Amino acid sequence: MNRLKGILWAALSSSTFGLAPLFTLLLLGIGYSSFEVLTYRWGVASICLVAFGLLSRRNFRLARPELKSVLVLSLFRAVTSFSLVIAYQHIASGVASTIHFMYPLAVALAMICFFGERGSVRIFLAIALSVAGAVFLSLGNDGFVRGNTALGLLAAAVSVVSYGGYIVGVRRSRAVRIDSIVLTCYVMGIGALLFFIGGCLSGGVRLETDPRAWLYILGIALPATAVSNMALVKAIKCIGPTMTSILGAMEPFTAVVIGILVFGESFTWQGASGILLIVAAVTTVVWKGRRAEA
Image (cartoon, rainbow, N blue to C red):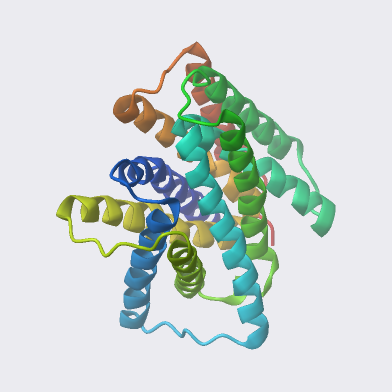
């Protein structure tokens, strides 16, 4: 039962996180800076989760060692979000998201190299299928660019490493003992503060009053941030970082579909092949995956 819950939490996390490119590009399109997008995204999401945590009587107290772990995790998560926004500004959102989806490889290698996790044939097969699917999706959209392609690709690659570090850290640091809601609140609150400072140092953060802009903000703050991050933490605690990262396949799938329907990004046979490979990877994990880490 715990395994099934973890799979469902991971699917919810990846599918809702895949909405982030849509609302990010909509906010950028009405003149928001990267720091403004992320300040509102993380700020509104953290406020909503704090309110939920207080209503459900969560304990927000942290010991000093736990606070240190949370600070490090917050930095990893903040770098991930910032690098992805930069990537969305320069390359197709589907390409950026599929490159970002290569983080399962980073997670698996980190767990094997630094934490002595034993690899299994099925896990490596799922990783290989996922990465191959991401590559095909990228090839299917490589003709659609918005700016500096090299910078966009580099930013997406940075997100792979930072997000992989965050996922491993949630399970292998003292943060694993912190309630999922509380941990997500701290990570997002600290991230919002960092982005706000960055915004103030680079032109300021506007006080938004436009109802349409607030719809975009709520879209990126609630399903694409609050829900996705809370579900991610729950999934990691149930089935571990490796399985959770592989089950993140819905993220690039969602981003590619939105990119095609909303932003006119191309879809080719390579893209279709990539989706099929990612579905195969998810099927491998769900039905034949090994037991989650203890």
